Image (tube, rainbow, N blue to C red; front, side, top):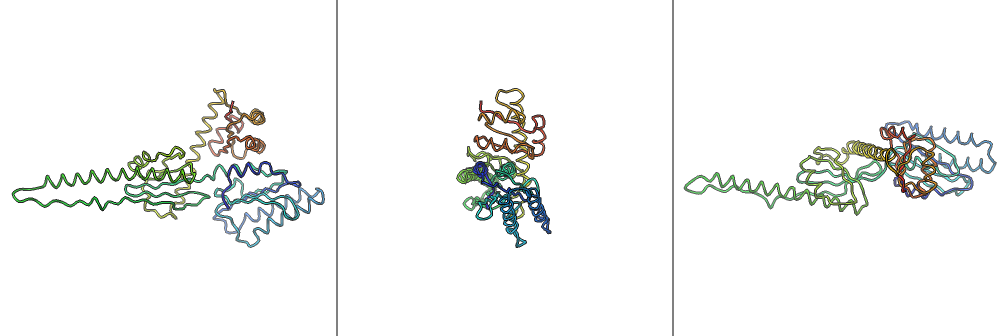
Length: 360
């Protein structure tokens, strides 16, 4: 199951089955060997059934069938979609109801959430889409460049390029009879070193171009680079890919580290890059709110702008009460939506947790 996307959320926005939808969000802690998430899921379903005990008979029967179907999904005791969570939406129907499920590379904000509504609960799904974007990961060194993909919380190797230097082998000249030849040997060595250095930087530039081309072909719009500063400079200079935003994650030599041992380093770098990007976005939006003509803040003003189709980008703090309607309306109006976390979400406090850039 692929990580959910904004298009998935948009497609679900108009789905309204006759008896409603049960939305399920699960988070899996790798350190949890006892399956606490399963208990939380069962408790959530029991609470849902209890709340609906006064509903019409047909709906109660359908809800019981849905609750059983969801628990049966995990009855083997081992089912755990890789790697960190799952989001699912199940039509309330006794038989043959429609279902949509996604495995998630990022964990939902709550460990287990079960909600019954007329439509799917989309705010957590959009939050996951914001945090699940596939990234290119470039590991750069003087004579080698590796390209990996970070998707759904996992790393996979895409390409590996290495500079061939055999044609540049240098042999020290023998001393000529009649006098020393140290100057000649030194000159030859310097010439070789210059050529080798030139070819190394040329290689890095060409590898940068190859990485950019590969990422654009795969429609991966963001990438992080790891490597010594001097090597990254030539690599970045060669990566002329207008549709890929490259950021330097760490100026460290990781070229020989096996892929399996890079996961935690890359995960932390992706999290840091996201936090920095969110903070820059919030600062930019709030600046427009304070002094520009295309900014709006607060649920009421933004709700009106969404109804009028004027919102270009909606920025919402994660877990904001009342964000479901704003996000659903923004998706319907083809607005860009970003859910922010941590310091970026805290900075939105002055805007009541939500701000927007308007189209006009």
